[in-house]
Every structure is written in C-alpha cells, then in structure tokens.
Length: 195
Image 1: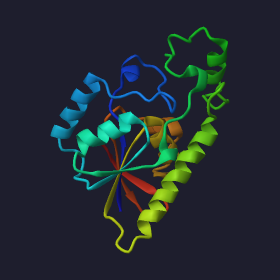
Image 2: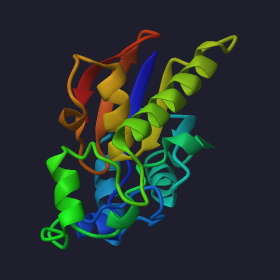
Image 3: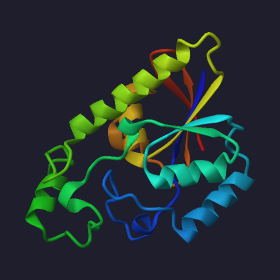
Image 4: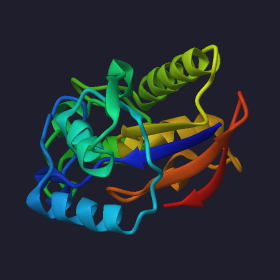
C-alpha cells in the first residue's frame, strides 16, 4: 500500500518561527495558502478520495486545498505535540529562558512545563498510525493508497518508529506543504521519495 505523509501548510505562527503545537489551532496564513496552491499545480501528490487528518484546522484546510474532493477522517491522536509554556513563542524569544534552554540542552527529551514529553508524544502518534493502518488493512478491499495530512512533529514521530531506512526523529523533518511517499508493508514505511 502506498502511504503519503504530508505536513500542513504554513500558519502565521510558522512564519514567525514559533512553536505551534497541539493547543494552538491556527488556520493557514495567506502565504501558506499560496504556497499550497503552487505545490498542487506541480501535481506531486496523488489524487485521493479519502484523507486522514489531525483535528487541527491547519490540516483540514491543507487537505481541502490539495485534495478538494476527498472525504476527511479526523484521527484525534495525530495532533501535534503540546508545547505547553513554549506554545506560540519562538526560540529567539526564549533564548535567555533557563527552562527553555534546559529543554533544548536535553535534545528536547525532558518534559515541557504544562506540555507533553516527546516520548509520550511519539508513542501517541505511532499508536494512532498503527491503529489506522490496521483498520485499512482489515477492510474487505484494502485501499491502494492512503494519504495523511498531519504535522511536522507527527510525521517525524511516525517515521522515527516505522520509517526505513532507519533514521532519528529529527532527520525526518520536512517543510510545510511537503511530505514523504512511502510503501507500507504491514510493518514498516519504506520511504521512496521526499515531495
């Protein structure tokens, strides 16, 4: 089965290099909408009759632009990490904040005050992806292609667990509106190309 993992388009917070996570339900920015329209014109994504999305508005809007005819299914646990007290703040803005510096020095592994731990976030995303793929594979006629319009962190979490070749979490970063084309063999996502 082919699987496409696509990061949502740019939001106002993305333009300001802010942490926009699971509690910041921002829509796409005008720049983000324009960039998605350009990507759509390049025809790098498949036609899709169905798309899995995170519950955040930026994912729904991205799916509507890239796949206007597709039915959308919300998968609640595919939302972005909750960045707690770092939400809607930039690294530059927090460069002298000792709490932020300590988190960065831990390679972002330590708990975020009032937020989520990366390990828990990764497990949540991987469980949601596994459950979704199991449902698809157990259909009488499994689909040939599945499309996910989700978040950068969510993609990194899923591919750090299931991606082949094996890479670390941060090695799977992808820009807004772009993503990965993969082959799912029932256990792993074999990454064919970066889109």
